[in-house]
Length: 360
Image (cartoon, rainbow, N blue to C red):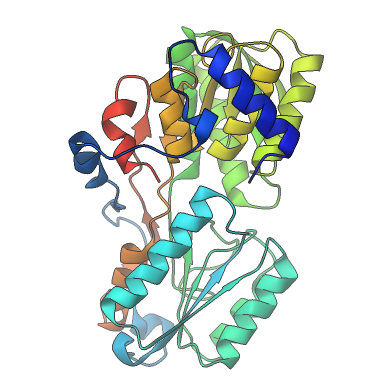
């Protein structure tokens, strides 16, 4: 999410001063020109799913008709405003893959971060003849009316990036996404290594009401307790996965806890907001206060390269190929995993320059 004008000005002016001799992408936010190294890294950008070891779901289990995607209407329900890199990349990936494989009719909607609108959107997609649904849920709870409407017509529902508190192969077919607990643990491991095991940490929580926030928090906190005895979590406050909120919350936390030495943000947008707040407080991000987050946006990874950010655990949003391959397999009668877990990468000062081309 974009920073307000004041925040952008502070960031642009101060960042270029704070990190002497480094061309922070935050100064211009124009991205990076691809090099041969970037091109090689970009080949690693696609999602890779771990082998399925748990329960599966088949068309015979779920019921419904076998559908040829080239003759089908597929609906995609996006949950949040496409004003952050993750949602932009996610929607683009699904849209591009639908065109690539020749889906007859592809319809997409955006709930604009409103649960009632997402329920309405899914019902509208069904009314428009959607035979298959791909849903990025806004929250883990609350979509039951929409799921019931799809289930009444045996419409297969593939969920991505946020897990529902519902029953796979009954309420929906399959969930495709990351292991969010593991992401939190890996972020904690990065922070422990980067700080030498001694730090006072502020946690910027994601939005409430979804499992991503819960899991990324528990994974991080539990790992710190287990492996970082000299690390103290001094504050936890929601930043709603938004850059401007991450900035404002960090400004408040730095005032009330001036001894903070590290930030764990549950997505890159909040981490970048925290970076702006650190600069506004007259401190150097990446050095005076270290920053660790989850996503893998190019903006954040470039800041690692610049020395103004410390670590990012990837959460790959390029769901298009995996989602449609899962649908193809399901329609062919193959049992697909009820939980298809993505193997995410990570970025740190040792590899960020070489892997920035894989960021989104």
